[in-house]
Image (cartoon, rainbow, N blue to C red):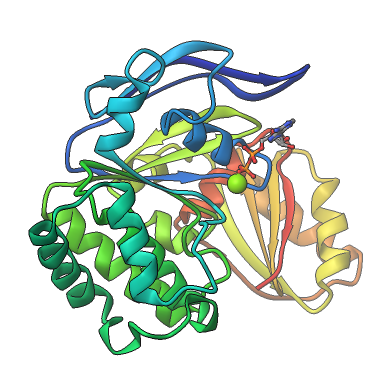
Length: 308
Ligand SMILES: Nc1ncnc2c1ncn2[C@@H]1O[C@H](COP(=O)(O)OP(=O)(O)O)[C@@H](O)[C@H]1O
Ligand SMILES: [Mg+2]
């Protein structure tokens, strides 16, 4: 349903998408995960036939992004990172605008409105100005607009960014409903809990696809020992760990530090080093990797600081 072949996009000398290959089957929900600047938006725009690639090709819903761009656009629902809702129009007027754009008949319109109001629960707000809706409701309206023409593939660029957790869950409920109807979904996100909910996850780093697979398969990539440690002095502990041979990755999650070790027997050495520096270990345990751990493990620069 979506196939990407040796896709390259350069902006001058900057490589935004680096010879990328990827395949998504019909009815699958695939997540695109990567930090800001990874190339997510660039990739989504290329797949939506809005931005031409430098080289390589891709097919979406059976159509080539270059040769069949217009037909392709009829088959996809693309929700850009900043979706252009008309804030000074009402909810209903926004839907009407998109219905006209897609040239829906009266009958199609009636059916579709019923359907989108059913999942979005926006009917009571139909005469509200779109600009006055909450962030979560705006995103539901935007999704409704791109579903009006019954697309086969949804390309969603960080649709839940900055949306509160409850609304994010609501948005995902709608996505799962759409998936059940057979729609193929490719969604970029920076939230790892959302990536966990996808059947397949693509990790993008500096334009390169560094891993692609089911969350379970991705977690099996970890071939080192992963530990979680909390100490009385987190910062001091981190600088000690950074100097230890055999630690290949360190990431800080609030008060906790995750690190990977090539060999388990090095752990005794680490305990001693921390003790010698006057750092007290409050808790130290081996843990199963989360998708976030895997991403950091696969990235080139493996030292990262995270809040939370
Ligand atoms: N129109 C553009 N001109 C030049 N550089 C761009 C342009 N759009 C994006 N970039 C650069 O390409 C890289 C990827 O950007 P983007 O696709 O927006 O990533 P993401 O959506 O993952 O944050 C970044 O380094 C960004 O600065
Ligand atoms: Mg982006």
